[in-house]
Image (cartoon, rainbow, N blue to C red; front, side):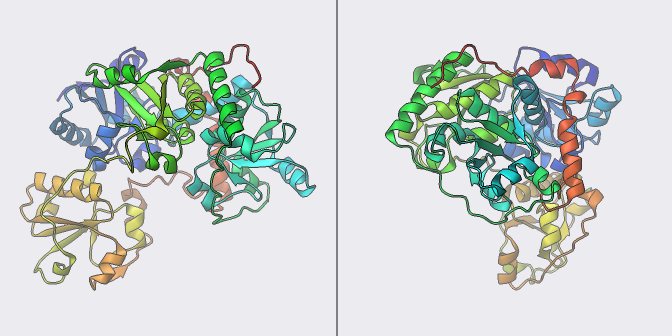
Length: 524
């Protein structure tokens, strides 16, 4: 196994070649502090995540752990999958910090830092919660659009807001706003998507006044106003013929004014067959549209979420990113921000709604055998029951007597005797089964199931709010985790964290982020 020290790795992160810097620690460890260009690829699900994040097996990959040797285990698994260009960071995250480099708290750090930079560079106007509330109370004409995912909108939303994920804003706006004088306010839960959504509309050259809601739903609550919970998002409006024509024209104008690049299907085919470069093909439309029809090989990455959480969809820096859409506006508005984050991005000249593929994209999975039915739990003498669920799921509900385990911390003595690994996730169960076999277990089986299945099998299901203890829950990020559950102090801490991201950047990290500014633009 080859290794590299932090001071040798740091300059490589601004080189022109492709690389993937993978943090193989669990999600909670990652969120407590990681290098700026590092992407989360937990060892517990490495077989599932690696092929999605790093599709080309020859990609130069650097693996980072907590200085505890888990990167070596991940190295073995990736090598077994065919990855052949792997290095391990000596000493892991602690060594990175010891070398004087920053470990950034939180998740989606690069995207959120970029959002703060966009506000500074573009002068994106914002509106306070107090101002918006006063306008609503006075009955002013305005439209509030929530740029988050429908699921997040359902959890909590502003009174009077409508769900319209960021990439849909410019596309759907003609059907949502009656005239060019109506102010449009874009909100999210914090800051980033409010800023990016509002600036995306401003990039279109609209006459409507457009504002980002300062500090989003968290700022709304901190100002003493109530949120709504459990609202079902309205379906996105279908475009009329005039709106379709307008979207085409606006897409063409964004391509011209922001210097975006287009490719055709023949070029894409050549790139996808190229074994020397990584090409991601991402469909930025809604989930409903993607499921109905998409191009072969395209993964679903709704544009707003792709910009907000780029590190959840791709890990290879300096790769080619090709965006798929129907008439181009959503792809173009997304490409502007990816380009600003230092990515090589292209728009595909093809209508994804006419693609031959249907349904959800296949997810890489690791098979395990044998499968043991739950009926054997009470009849098999000496059976050891291990639960590989997420730690918070285990706390909420697990079979009485089942021990919680995580693949990254399985002691050798755990591999003794007959074992059944249960859990809600096939990837987590399979990972624990594999590791137990590696530790010498000879009688180990799995069963992917949850509380309803356990109860149906006659097993006692219990909850333990404080077990496993917090220090063991390395898969859960406690960092301001309850900011959406009306913990106002947690919300304050989170917003302060977002606002402080830019000050943490060094010259190398800051140099990658360059919001793309439009040349002289026509109003469409």
